[in-house]
Structures are given as C-alpha cells and as structure tokens.
Length: 237
Image (tube, rainbow, N blue to C red; front, side, top):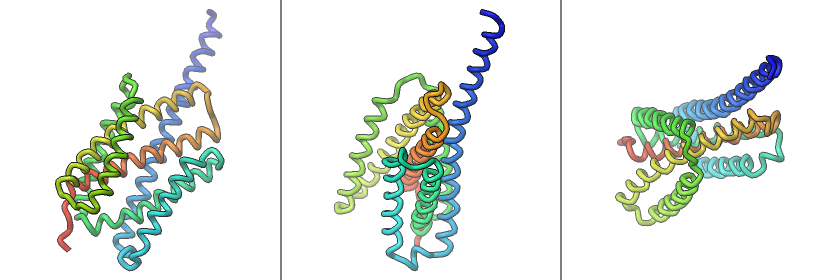
C-alpha cells in the first residue's frame, strides 16, 4: 500500500473520530444546558413564590412537560432540528419551574448535597457505560421493567402511605436509574460510532443528539429525585 493510500485512510479515521467526539460532546452539552436552565428557573421560581400563589399551576406544568416529552420522543423525526431543540429547552424550563417546589419541602443545603451526590453517581455510572465492553441491552430491559414496577408501587403507596415501602422505593429508584444511566450512555456511544461511520449526518445527527440529551437529562433528574427522597432533610415550616 502506497503512502497516499495510507494518508487517506488516516485522514478518514481522524474524520470519523472527530465526528464521534463532536456528536458525544453535543449530547452532553445539551444535557448540561438543560440541567442549568432547570436549576436557574427552579431557584428563581422558588424565590418568587409563584407556585404558592397559583396552586393549579403545578398540574398545568405537569401536563405540559409530559406533552413535550411525548412530542420529542414520538414525533422528533417529523420536526426540524431547530424545533426539537426548542422543545427540549422548553421542557427543561418548565421542568425547572415545577421542580422549584422541592425547595419548599427540603432544605436548600440538602438539595445541594443530593445534587452533588447525584452528579458523582451519574458521572461514575456514565463512565462505566462508556468504557465497558459488556453489552448492557439485557440489563437495560431489566431496569426498565423494574422502573414500571416502582411506578406502580409508588401509585399504590399514595393510598397505603407506608414509610417502609417509601424507603424501599427510594433505594430501588436510585439503583434503577444508576443502571439506566450506564445503559443509555452505552446506547449514545453506539450512536456516536454510527455517526462517525457516516450512518447519519446533518439534521438527523442534530435531532439524535437532542434525543440523547433528553434521555440523559431524564436519567439525571430522576436519579436526583430518588437520592433527595432518600437523603433530603425536610423544612420544619
């Protein structure tokens, strides 16, 4: 093989690696942007007391956030990359307003501690999902079924109000979303590899990065909520 051919192969490999890196950075960049938007709006909404003044607002916010998630996950192929990005930003903003209610229930210091603990757990399990050679597909399916189980248990506990069951749900929730984080990071790595190989590009890659960011955002937020239920100190007021 001549030097020109070797140079072309080397350039092709470099381009593929650059495309993979760009895709992966875009996914995590949007995820961190979403978390930042949510955190800022949660803090300022709690300071304003708007949820206390409008008791029906949380229900409307819940409906709106669910609607945006369904639109993004089910109709993303029919929308433009710009529309998908705006939907993700809108979801992060509305979710931040809704999460502001946590600052009325838990002390600010315990919320910050739970956030830091979540960040460490998310980072460690995400790294495992990225570097492991083990196929996590079956584990992901198991954790998803377990998630359905604790959702049903949580609904039932709204009637039974069992402290022991609530404690167990909190622990299981942490375990489940730790597992889902590793699984989802591995899926996103596979998407990045496909992008590097030229399987998809342009608008499709932009939308895939937004969908990946939404997936990791949801993993982080849900893990945070379960950690907070487990470790959070409630306000006395």
